[in-house]
Image 1: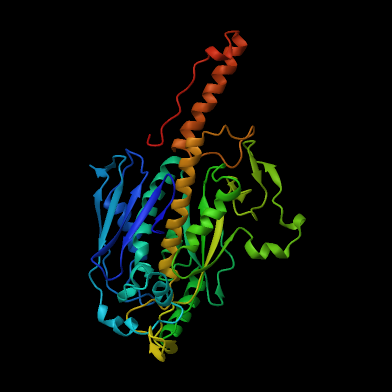
Image 2: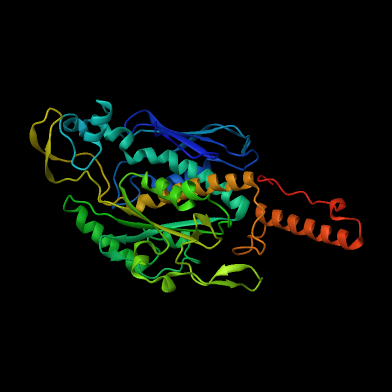
Length: 415
């Protein structure tokens, strides 16, 4: 239980931190989607350990193997299975953990639930499990980009009390984020963040903070009312990540400091006559449904639990003792958490997109949100719909009746 996520676009992750490998089975992938190992590897490289001095030094290449679902560079509609083998695990570093619980880790709660656990590396509670999520997210990003030109960009917004305060959600790019090891798009703020993490790690301690993610060009209409609201699905997805402790959309908790008049996003018409919002305090979601504006969300991550400092704990047998964390761990999870949060956002949006396409809603009388990105499936679909309406109107004027007007075929997801 608890190892699968999604409905129509669904992933199941498997494997332990110090087992033979970890991976994912991705179901619901449409056929004819171009997909290669390089697409997945690019995302895995962003979350892999050993990439800089401010993350865990565990030296894993995290090389992906596609085991099924892809033939000659194209998906075939069957489940895509991806495997990443574990090579640099040192299980001996965890010998004391078999007896004593690491404070604030999952050791004690896994024992309470199962009566046993994979001690080495934390087993399924290790962040190594997120390899499968990031691989699945890479496929989800391909689908979202092909259909609607969706762009998902995450970055470190805060480390402890060092905060990025000025970022343009419409222009911030992955290139900006990847320009430094902390993954903050502002160079000056990034240097301060790196200095803080360096200072913390030299003391054997750890530090947390916030990852912010923006998703641009998300079609209006994604998400469902009541229990399947888009922000509810996003919250569950992001809060399922290791070390996550908080979630916000749009104005978040700061919005409680505003009045309704101050907080509301007034509607307006853009140059193309489409319904837009003048501000985006809603964070791109209203009533649990995407409104076409940029989705903005934040996820708070606690400091890494395993640290190189002596702490009070108890043994499995109920004896008080002390424990100093061993093994190789991140002094700050945030740089590697960025691709993880992006992946979870992509998984939710791909699932919601498939549900919306299956639902086939007619849409608002006046289009909501910005125009579709040219060259995407959605742009072609909207053009076909406009052509059909124009043909029907012309037929009605000519007296032939709307029912006899030719209908333009809507393009498929994979066109």
